[in-house]
Picture (cartoon, protein in one colour):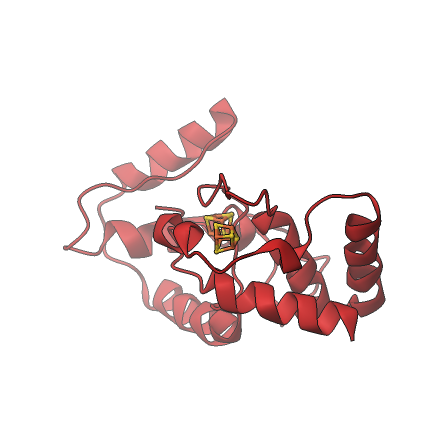
Length: 169
Ligand code: SF4
Ligand code: SF4
């Protein structure tokens, strides 16, 4: 599930020029999953016919991964390893929260803060959330329901505690 991490692998890697053409990562990312003998079904979200046709073409190619593709997968793994604890795809499968915590929105702010370095933007958004009477991370009672539903197995409770701490200090 989510072989392209909510479409994010269709973006340039952190070490790549942001102007670099996107879309280069789709084929190796999908083929990495297709080539795993322990995986029977790949669930990749698609919103256009072009995406569907592209995925069908990749799935129809039964060749092994090339050395270049393997090298690329290793590069992706290394560059994104530090993100695995906060890599929320925004799927919202963790909802509903009994305390109406908007988990994916809060996780996105954490990504703004930690991944993109937009610290003040993230803090301001968090303060705005509290002011407009929406639930911020402090509404979380740590019940753990969301963690049971998260396909990325994120430690949501731990991250929400951290979010409230860093955005209010
Ligand atoms: S752990 Fe917190 S965010 Fe998750 S469902 Fe429970 S109250 Fe909501
Ligand atoms: S926390 Fe998990 S389930 Fe919730 S939106 Fe993010 S990836 Fe999806």
